[in-house]
Image (cartoon, rainbow, N blue to C red; front, side, top):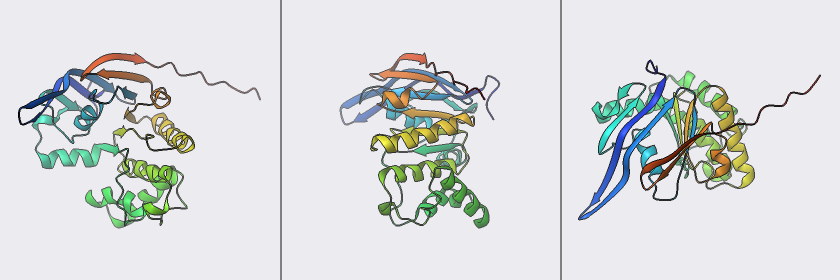
Amino acid sequence: MTDAAGRVIDVSDVSKVHRSGDLTVEALRSVDLVVTEGEFVSIMGRSGSGKTTLLGILGCLDRPTSGSYKLDGQEMAKLDETRRAHVRGKKIGFVFQAYNLLPRSTAFKNVELPLVYAGVSRRERKQRALAALGEVGLAERVNHLPSQLSGGEQQRVAIARALVVRPSVVLLDEPTGNLDSGSADDVLGILDGVSARGATIVVVTHSSEVAERASRIVRLADGQVVGDEQVEQPLAVGVAG
């Protein structure tokens, strides 16, 4: 459940410093970001701007060096690794650019896996995994290995795996970065549908086409937020009957 202000994601004065020997790199510098329930937000910026670092913090894969990150009103820095893993499994669906599918497992097994970790019964796992694959248009490919699927199909399996846990937040890192234009359009259509159902989505992208599908674009440069703008979506045109 979100807090009283409807804030699903609440990042306040977050900085992230990477240290390697004598080298210090400020990946994020005093970042503030609020994403409310049901928003579709794109994060844009050049390579090295801090986009992926920020997404890792939002997904509880990393911790900020300083500052506060609250998810559904809960301060993530106060949680130990076990509780953070529980949050990731229950509340967050993560889609990676490289798909991160298990190569020797079928599409069904890949999508089912988060439910296995969550302790969901075998019968319910089957129902939910098949439903998720059907939702992304892969009902006929459930028994195929990743090597038997196109890049676009593999990314759709990855999206189904993220959605099967019924997360409150879906995070995507360059979801169309490795895809041709046709496959990218398929993925964008799926995201439009997920957004229309009221999910909270944050996507990191270099692509203006992807970013403009969102309701809001946040721009990063040198680890700082340098822009935050609403996107005007075209009005639906009715057809007279």
